[in-house]
Length: 166
Image (cartoon, rainbow, N blue to C red; front, top):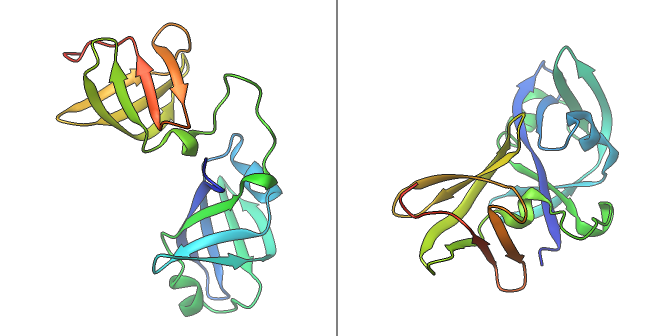
């Protein structure tokens, strides 16, 4: 099981005083501010950053990290994934999963055909959808006990009731 979970991504710089936009993967988006400190991946190394200031600006979340006071220093962080330690997040009930735990898992159907790996998930009004990349792309609704038969985080596998031709 992953010790850190990606909960967002650093966006573009905002202004000249070190502020940056944040793309949150939490629901609602502003919940990302509840989890601190953040770990950013830069040059394949995770580094800890503390938020000095944050605010909601129109529909954007913007933050300024401690020790980042100008545009050029903030620009280096652009596109960095934002993660937090798993221990910072609430414990989930049985049958609930953080999306980042599902990303990268192999997806195998009932005919034992590997459809690919989960690339990412997205929400729709009806249900969440897994984007599975293999020989082709599959959009598989994340509906437990109907489409999703089993999620095995130990074996890194999701078993699905899904035809390989869909």
